[in-house]
Each structure stands twice: as C-alpha cells, then as structure tokens.
Length: 195
Ligand SMILES: Cc1cc2nc3c(=O)[nH]c(=O)nc-3n(C[C@H](O)[C@H](O)[C@H](O)COP(=O)(O)O)c2cc1C
Image (cartoon, rainbow, N blue to C red):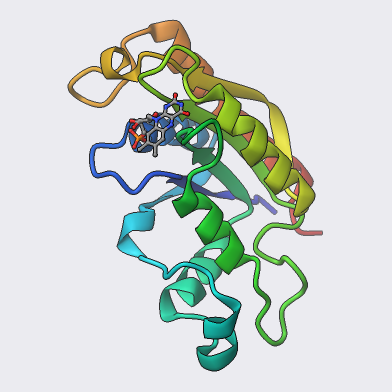
C-alpha cells in the first residue's frame, strides 16, 4: 500500500522575517516534490515557557508543549533550519526540544524523536552561514535517536542571498536545499513505512 511520509518543517528562530523560516520553506518544496506531505510550523505560534522542572512537576506540561508533541508525533521526518546564536543552537529551539522530550503517560521514551529522519540547514548574515550551530543541533538530535542525514546547507550572507519572494537567488544553492527536503522525504518513505 502506498505510504506518504509526513515531514514537519520548522525553524529555530522566532523572528517574523527569519531567513531560516524562508530557508526551510524551500526545503519543504523539495519534500513535496518527492511526494511527501509537508507541514510548516512556526514556533512563535506556540510560545513555550522556559523549561523548568518545578513548573513541570507542579502544573504538568503546558498546553503548547502538548500541541508541539502531538504535531511531532504525527510526522515521520523533520526539516529544520536553525540560526546560530553565539556559535550554538538558539534558546528557542533547545527549549522546544527539551519540552518535546518530556514523556507523558502511555508514551514511549523520546517518542517525538526516536527513529525519525531529519535534514538540517542554517542561514546567517555571517560568512559561515550558521554552520557552527548545526554541529550542536546535529549532536543533540543524534543523541535523542534522530537519524540526521549527512547533507546540510549553511547559507552565508543571508541578507543578500534571498530574493523578495523568499527564494534563494543562487539556483545551485536553492537546488541543494530542495534536495535535502527530497532526501528526507525519500528516506522517511523507505525506512519508516509501516509494515
Ligand atoms: C543572540 C544572537 C547571537 C548571534 N550569534 C551569531 C553567531 O554566533 N553566528 C552567526 O553567524 N550569527 C549570529 N547571530 C546573527 C544571526 O545569524 C542573525 O540574527 C540571523 O538573522 C538569525 O536568524 P533568523 O533570520 O532566522 O532569525 C546572532 C544573533 C543573535 C540575536
């Protein structure tokens, strides 16, 4: 029976005009072209408090953490564009990962992450395009059971790289980003197809 993988696409930035939101939407097109169903999630629309074990203990998971977990569980693949803040992952992304990693009754450990396939990318006005931050993102996801594909893209000089319509001006770079989307889609289809 045909299986259509579902790919969740989001950025580790809350900023409205985020380059990384634009970037992940390009990868999302590649995933759709490879016959996946792709969903864009803006983390700004599900604000989360700073993770605090005391708060978790007294009040349980906030409603938006439940929402985030639910949407993650409905998808097999992840496309993630994360800016680099001080050479590392953004607080917004790490906070979202921490909340999503918390188990609720009836759930397998790390159910939002384990066995999923992810593709990473970043964009920054700097010369390295946020590449150093991706090292940390890759390491965190790998440690919680996500298969992160080796291909990745870091778009430098992001303030000059995007056209008005949000696309990348450099065709080769645009194709590379779309290819990441397509690769995550095809791998998700192949290895996560239910038996
Ligand atoms: C707190 C902070 C730290 C930053 N550190 C870095 C950095 O280490 N390397 C880098 O290339 N850009 C850094 N930047 C610049 C971001 O790459 C830039 O703001 C980028 O536009 C953020 O991504 P976004 O457009 O998706 O929001 C930093 C920005 C902020 C706000």
